[in-house]
Image (cartoon, rainbow, N blue to C red; front, side):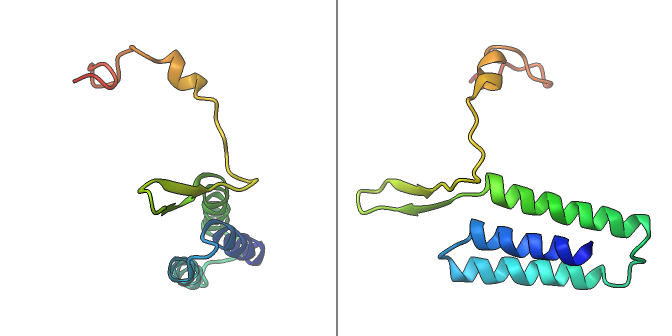
Length: 110
């Protein structure tokens, strides 16, 4: 269970940070450190299950919500969007346009 989650994270980092060796190695080091810190957990315990679920959630976010951008010569950014990148239609944003937020101030108002 934990090994599958670890492999899931490694695959997600490879996809999210492809071509950026520094960030890729830092992300993999962080994943390894976090898994090493959880090594002492009882594999059948609730804490281990929560840690595995958290790792799978992180992998999902890396795979679907993280994109790389690189500045072109003309100052524009080129995004590397892949087949796993989540693409929304912004309908939920359009529906809430002009409504008040929790703070009582309209969204995006000056």
